[in-house]
Image 1 (cartoon, rainbow, N blue to C red):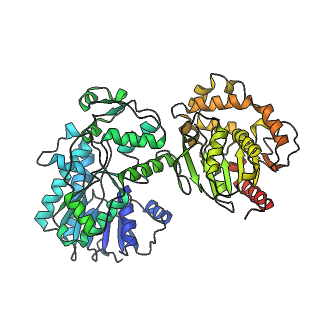
Image 2: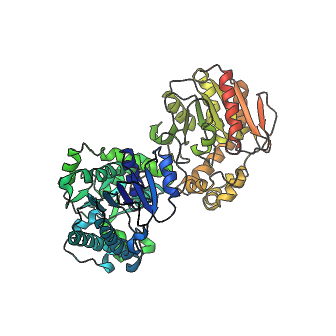
Length: 574
């Protein structure tokens, strides 16, 4: 095997992106992982990274010699240690095994390489606050104390062995896949579970983007003057924590907390009340850091950080897209946008779509993913106001839909499912010139009404606490339909109440919508599953998908996509 760089911890959040960056730069890379490396290679494939120059090797920082084979790595010139045991609540022994003893073993292994150019050790920005202070495992917890002890151990061992060492101390690294640390604060904010901010108005929790950090790491060995240097890699323009949370709250369409709780008070309060891990409290500080050397090196290599507000908003979109790591990410472009006074989650093509796809109650834009992937033209797929990931609007859904489609420059086929068929039909009746066609999938106003229980005041708590499997069965969903996202969305503050209110509203509009269907001039087509037929006959053409229930776009996406493509063909849209 030939590799000029090796990355320990290559399967982690930073390590895998560093591997990708080195491969893109043309470096043959050995990726050192504890397991098979299947997760790393799958991730690299998903990023479109050419793996021709990649070699995956097994390593264990807790073993003598790191558990590496003796042969095949003598060509390595640059060694990156991105491995760390990152968890709160560890014992000191668990933390020290990797973060102290393991880090020292990497130095010793690197020292034996005949052509070593550089060892890059990744530590953390809080090392600045711990200089000349002995690690306190009781006060700071095993993770931070072990990182501090490991930082010192690496410096001493490198000096003893004559190893050219560069240390990179990043702040909170943000980017797709980062669900730890600050992400938990964003998660609580998103779910309406952050009544007060931890710390005071001057708390500074700086960030740096993942892309910038791995490019910085990749450049370090090429810079001769970086040997023996320590770099604090963070964005000085990161707002203080209240401003940071306020920026994200505005972007996501949620309410930011107005109160704060001092760190000293948080330390005395029960964890069951604060829901804050005691080990995170030492990160709540007003300390600032000397980033001059990192900035100078970045400039010399043509590196620059994106505007921090833009980076934070994009990270928030990435977090929400995956429900903070609990679901699959949305396909295609996604993010929040202002639509009709509502912070709306929008996926797909917002300007020139061939289709606009609207979901029904309990679902989100994700319900259309399998169908949208098989269509012959781009789709615009939003989450409806107050549902899924969208904020509340305060205006009728049909007004929101009009604002959404005002920005569309094409004549798309408008496709609506269940509850959304009402607003879609109203828009089509008012603006038939803007659409190529209207397709109603399982229109709720033509099917048996929802139960009286789901339209009662008891509906909201029932929806909020119901298991995902029960909700899925009520919709006739297959077991692999991503049911967990149903409960994640419903447990957002006020979400179940909004769903129940929408059910009551829709029930009162059934007769009106049936009249409107008969009067609409735009060609309309209806699609239903054989297991969820219409409650009464209609003059509108109806296509029945065999063995499908209320959500054929989930259970039979190929069939639905074929029907929608045929509808667009009949409209003569190209």
